[in-house]
Structure formats: structure tokens, C-alpha cells
Amino acid sequence: VGTKYSMYIDVSKEKEGEIATKRLFFDITINSPPVNGTLFIQPPLFGINNQTTFVISCNDWVDDTTEILHYSFWYHEVGTPNPIELRPWSTSNEIFTNFTVMRYQNPETNVTITCKIKDNYGIIAEIQSSITIVNSLKSSKYSLGKALENYTLPNTTTPSMLLARSEFLKSLG
Image 1 (cartoon, rainbow, N blue to C red):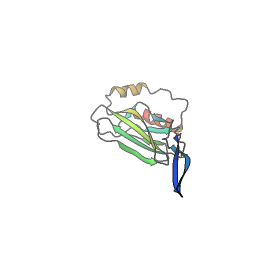
Image 2: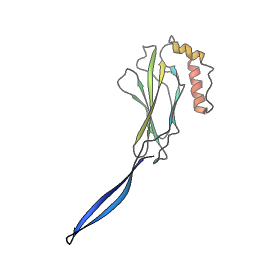
Image 3: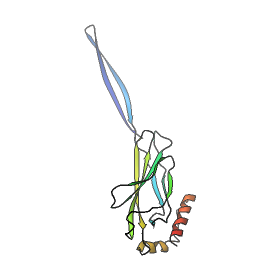
Image 4: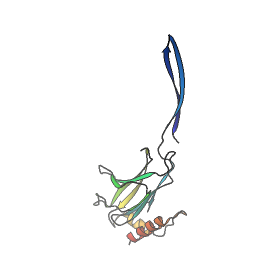
């Protein structure tokens, strides 16, 4: 909900030597960005470079002025100059993607995922989360992934979450 301001203005006019003043009251509401949403990434910790399919979704965002919000997804490798757009503005709040990182020589690359949420007036909210992209089977996280093959999913499992888990487990070999 936006911030509401109550204001008034005094308007004066001189007529036949007398000044008449009228006070006008009005309210202005300043639009607020979308709120109360989450960023969901599956698998949540890490994946294999150019193999693991991630499901990234922005869920439960609400706005007081816009019923249908627009979403844009970005990623940024730590140590690189600019974020990269995964998908431009769309009404879909979910993407499926894998990553080919620039710093593939390193055993692991940390990546920040950003979801931008925009209302019809162009007011934008952002939410971020980090994951690790494993570039080498020698990484300790690759071994951890093998150990996590039987991890349990939350009760709110959607078909896209199940697909992401399946792709993640396939990428582990």
C-alpha cells in the first residue's frame, strides 16, 4: 500500500479591493513497489556448470495498484563486472535455466540471482539469492550433491520443482 499524504492549498483572489481566500483539500497517494513475495530456486544450493536445470520463481508478490505484475530475471557472477539478463520483462514469474559461467576455470563460481518485479507504473522491487555453480567434479560441493540425492522437498512441491529436482539429480550422474 502506498503512502498517503493529505494536503491543502490556499487560493486567494482580489476582487473590488477585497481578498477572497478558498482552501482546497486533497489527498495524494504515492505508489509503493510490489511486496511480500519470495524468490525460490531449485535446486537451492548449487548445480553443475551447463548441466543443472534450475527452476527460478518469484512467488506471492502483491501490489496495491497492479493485478498482473511483470518479472525480469538476472544473474551476476561474483568477480565479474555486470549482471546478465536471463529473461526480459514478462508476466511469467518462473524460468527454467542452466548456467554457463565465465569463470569456469575455478572449481566453483558463486552466482547471485536477482528477480525484479514491476507494477504497471514502473515501480520495481528486487529480491536476490545466491547459488554456487560447480565447474569441476573435484569440487567438494559435487561430492555433497551426491550425498544429498535423497533430500526431501517441502510440502508445497509443484511440478516445476519436481522437474528441477529430477534435472539436478540427473546432472550428478
